[in-house]
Image (cartoon, rainbow, N blue to C red; front, top):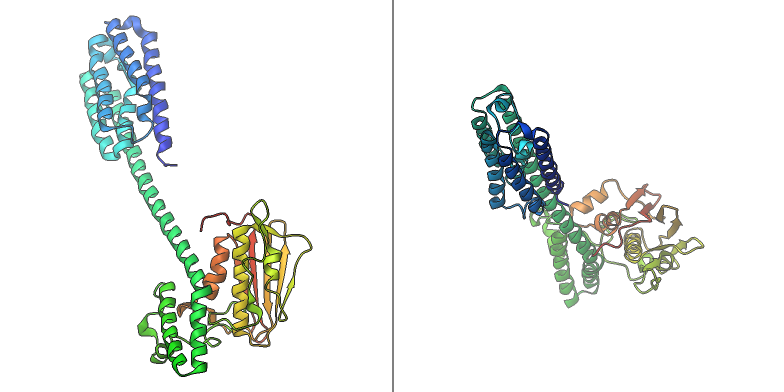
Length: 422
């Protein structure tokens, strides 16, 4: 909702209440007016105008400049008409004008519509009309004029700041949405295209001949795509000639962390990273999926899976994204922990959150390796694991001790944001 919309609603109420106040003042002192019928006629016009235009001050779009000028005309006319219908004694004693404080509503309308500059000009016009009505710059008149001027300028300035803040917030939300979509696409590319290209590069080098040339070309495309996905984090000038000639980076098994969640590369033909099957589970009637069934597809001779006895139901997209993050962690075990490494998956169903722990018995991650991999554009942990959990409102914690393996703990709340559109 617009920040200024409540101000327009407040102005609508202000106009109606101050109209009633002006009529009440006249009703209380009507016998003291020199021409009470003239005053009553103006107040009748004021009441009809106020009630008929209630909808015009409900928003900035409906409150046009033409209407604001007409509103100001009604206010100024009432001020200038006061000496005609009231006595000189009452005016000299500081008696109220016919519209009384209803006049401030006309000034505030300009402040909300056009900001503090419009408010300053219009309040000066109203102030001049009050001075003409009084005939002399009396202290109370000057006080009231300055009060209206300062208040209207301040409100106009606040409205301008609110509008600028709204624009900034809207832009920030657009950037955030674009960033989230970019990260989602980057994860999908990382989990599919980049891994295939890396595998083609590796297998081509192993086979030799024409396959080696094909592998070299796949490696070059992998580097170009990784740079694009990483947002230009790995400029060509920073890559060595050896990296360019063999496809832009260390070979799989050398560039990332040697444990779960370490880096990126080609998936091994077999091993822990079998990954959850997309069709491993059917959705429940309420659109949820049993996370146990998705993760059970990861289990094999090298991966052990421990699960609760009851179904662990999550919204479909949240369950699939969490299972994909587990698959990415197992991919890294497969690539970096060695052919003989074993992995364990533990699924815990807590009252407020779901926890999945992936642990391996590999050599662990050298200190600083994750940061180096991210700078090189190899974003397995940053995107495929942490990025997924961040979008679900959860977190991914990685603990590794050299020589003692790596543990990745994935947590998502029960109210995971899985229902957001992709």
